[in-house]
Image (cartoon, rainbow, N blue to C red):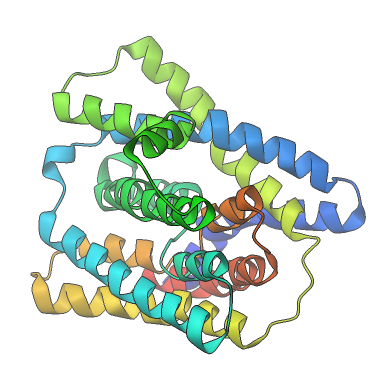
Length: 302
């Protein structure tokens, strides 16, 4: 019964804006060009503002080291296995293999899990989710970008990495946010008001645009789509749960680490595929199926 209550509110209301975008895309009310414009604005303006506010206000010194390390190791192991499957078993290209493996470990924590967690537990009690957003943005997303550049250009130089960071508002927001978080300096109240007001637009805008963009996806699940959907739904959360059980104490906060691991595949894999000219069919389907199927698993875990 409690799971049904959580499913009704807040999970379905958060999911509904993406579903609305999907329906409007299918009806032709919103076009793919509209979605790309809205997504570009959300990703380059509103989402970095939201992430900066979250990370700057997070007590970074209080990040739990052991469960964070467990989560990172689980990501590394599952990513390596996913890349091998995509490349050797399903015969996908190297860049698509990176993004399929990335979709198996990168949950939609910023746009999906964080709003749900804030509504359920309050902004002051979501430090584990903030930890995962920071970890994924710096390590998983940053690592995937470097891997894509290495495969695209054949090399990666420090200058190339620096230029990529300077052209990526999300990474800039993370770096400056971590600086404020570590300094212990409180943001001025007018700045905080600006971040709260504008950052609140990030999730609904990005999820709506994602729904419109995905409305043009043909649903033809092959073995790769089914495999990576199962990896994101079951294998990765199970790896995190096992690691937490073996390596750490039974801390109530571990539930939020597991909630973050069980989230649907994040939008960054889809966005990177568009950016680098990688085919999006399999990646988009993994996102759609995990978004729908995690409605029920997240309701139970929350």
